Length: 632
Ligand code: COA
Ligand code: AMP
Image (tube, rainbow, N blue to C red; front, side, top):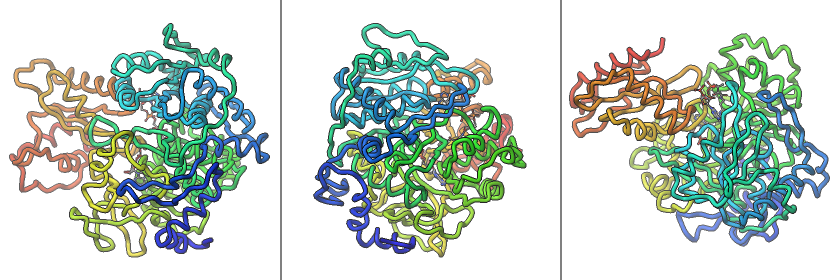
């Protein structure tokens, strides 16, 4: 239908219906859609209304019915437990049908929510697909989140059932999940009816009588369940992501548009074929995991890798190369941080030489800015195309990418290339006026968004409109700033809000401030994201103490760090906090966070004319130095 990027993009803009109905033709529907794009309830656009399908059928049953039953669907590679296990599509179908049967026994039906708080093990994928199979809505919560974060999600999603494991395994050892789960349920006013607990041999959990069900016991009592057909527009999952406050946003994904767009991306962006081995080295708790460990590769009949390990330390910086060569990986997708971690431990890339990785054809990176140094290091080392692509939890797939399956465009280091078909990307100013090429502004996507992007927030249409659609009328506000060059290449300069990216994990500095502010000795605080050579960004904090506090500053900052770790999770990585006499503010009381960021990053800064007292900036400079910023 198209042989060049230009043709594909033009068609997706000029004839949306033709573009996406062709893609939808490759998905199995029980009933064909009535409308490709339904714009009868603007700004709530819906895709494929009237269509009926089942996501799990498309991801598993269809492949089994079409000769892939014996093909490996999942390769579970877990250096932290010393396990490699291959699961065929046939076995996958059996397991998922049983888990679906177990959920049915627990009373879970179409539309009910199930929260999955699990590590990187096959059972997590079984649980997700089992929900999809019976039309239940899953919400996977990243295992690194602390009970408070889990509680907020329980409160919002109101799950009937929760599924968890006894533990996750980090290189430093097993992390018990069950106490975290119990605490979260205690904190939440909504109580799930039942919890299914998958016991791992490394650390067993004690079950709560009457509420908890052992995974294996549940399966023993279950009969395999079939697929329940749902509307294309019915929710498949909710994935919570950080916004500017402590309350995460429940990004909703539908069934129809999601299947259509994700399958399309496998062929046209990632350039794989059914049967190929595709590896997204991320976590199922993040959007990259949802889209490219689980759904995308399965819709397309690929073999997906579920890797329970790190890029370094499990056991060494050759871990990725081992997995690639051992499992014949064709495409690797990960975050730049992973490559920076490998580069730090093995700057000359000596570990690559131990393995034959000639099977690897493309490396895709996303989740944070791909700095030119990392780009050049990776492409010099691997000698394959290194493709930066830009996306967000909300979109579910790349907004800008080099579509390798259509046509490889020349790569420009520092740019994720051009808008992907379906995304009408514009650089705009504060008044939503288009800016000329080369000029930096905020990045907006003209509505409608393509299939698989969030149709709304979970049970929060108003929040969807106010968070994304109000500030720049007619556009979806991405929250990112950047510019477009004269050739139409996009450059992402970073978030324009209080969201930061730590090791490819999206976190809210506003959310951290809410935790810090709860400390009884803290009068006010500011948490800002500063540059970090390994993790891209890390948060640092400045606190002002209440008058009359006599406790040592060092003790208070330690407590603040522990509070953030305890309430958000270790992944927040807030380690450095300084006490200051006051925060620099404008005369109207706005904290000058961007100037503080420049100071901590060691960049030149101008004293804003609106500042209340310029001396406050010198105080920040002094305090930043005491906690080691700017870094050498
Ligand atoms: N469960 C429990 N704790 C977790 C966890 C999980 N699933 N994931 C991370 N944590 C904890 C870690 O143990 C660590 O705790 P610590 O402070 O006690 O050491 C903390 O959260 C920070 O973890 P992490 O960001 O993984 O830092 P690290 O220093 O252990 O490792 C990297 C650094 C670069 C190796 C690691 O961040 C990495 O692999 N990044 C790849 C990026 C990625 O996959 N991003 C996903 C989006 S595509
Ligand atoms: P998440 O929702 O966790 O996937 O995070 C999305 C955010 O990560 C985006 O809004 C960007 O700020 C950032 N991001 C993702 N991919 C890229 C990229 N390729 N380049 C720069 N920033 C990126």
